[in-house]
Each structure stands twice: as structure tokens, then as C-alpha cells.
Image (cartoon, rainbow, N blue to C red; front, top):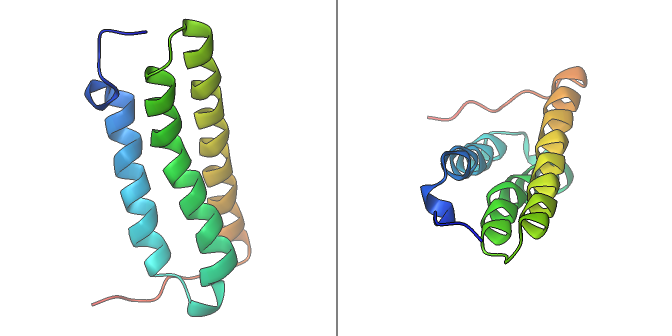
Length: 96
């Protein structure tokens, strides 16, 4: 579909770092929040670079656009989860 490999795309590089940041952030959340919220954060974080990579490997621009659209949806999920975390007052644990 494109001459660039997905790992060469600036957007993929940014969102793979975001996925790493999400994993680091969720490790600092209180233990009682680990299952539900952490799982949602992580799935959405993984989905971002994964969908961009998968779309990049597709044969048509239309297919690629569909996967980019799914990635945008995952980004909106992450934004929503961050807003909810703030609104309900979840605080990170301090790490050493």
C-alpha cells in the first residue's frame, strides 16, 4: 500500500511510545484498580500502534483508512479513561 514500513511512520513511533507510557502509568495505579481500568487502558494503548501497523500492511488506501479510524477511536478511549481517572480521583502510587 505504501512505500514506508509502519515503523518508519512518525505517528507509529509516537503511539508505540504512548503504549509504553500507558503500561508504566498503569503499574502505578492502586491495586484495586488494576483489573478493570488498567486492562482497558492497556488494550486501547496496544490497539493504537497495532491498528496503524495493520492498516499499513493492507493493499488499499480504503483499508488503511479504516484501520487509522480504529486507531483514532482507541485514542479517544484513552482520553476518556484519563478524564475518568481524574474525575473520580484515582491517584497513582508512588514508585521508587
